[in-house]
Amino acid sequence: MGSARVGTKSKPWVMTASRSMRILLLTPLFLFATVPQQPRDAEKDTTAILQANYLYNIAKLVEWKDPEMRSGNFVIGVIGSANLYQELIKQYSARTIGKQPIEVRKLPRAAEVERCHMLFVGRGDLALLPEIYKLMNGKPTLVVTEYTGALDDGAVVNFVKVDNLLKYEMSLVNAQKHGLVVGLTLKNLAHKVEE
Image (cartoon, rainbow, N blue to C red; front, side, top):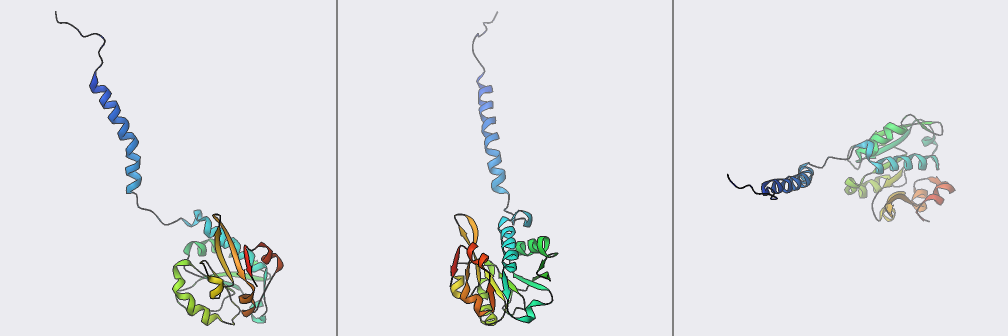
């Protein structure tokens, strides 16, 4: 009879297991590498959530000297930043600032801006700001932005990242130019205040 090999293992099985293990480990990498990046979901955009919260609380701590701004709706205009706009609508459009109901408006990407109490201009629309600053000069609108040097350019409030946390800085000089009185609490909570 033929001789049987005793104590040897089949090499093809070892190669197959090793190969299978490599395929299992590498497949997820290839799958994720081919999935296109989707825009941030508004419900998960924590920056938009925090910015909306800041805008609401800042509005509560600022006084508009212009008597015409103390009646009717409290208008928050947003240029760019669709997620911030959605968050403001979802969380704050049914609230009030004092006795004024909040109205959130998505404004067209243009320098000609309708009258509003607060105007947020997103990072993607910075090219509009020089003209917006000119047109808003002396008007009772609190301009809010999110770029380095914004206070020097004319913004009243600017969002900044500090140690990976969203904070705001503000210019009291610019606030006065727009006929705004900034509350002490708002000044104390700011990361930086230019006087």
